[in-house]
Length: 71
Image (cartoon, rainbow, N blue to C red; front, top):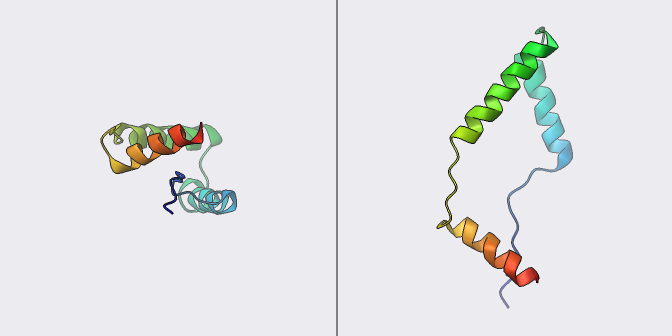
């Protein structure tokens, strides 16, 4: 039987925290907090600006099917 449950690639919370701390240590150490936040906001904006909503992708289709099958 095929598994239709949708799951996305995800980091464990502890792994995400570890990566965040590494980024702070390697790139933001010594900066004022306001400047570090500005840099992180710009990073978030740049990441968001490079992503497109692709409703035709197989990943999006799997998510839709998984959501509909959950009802």
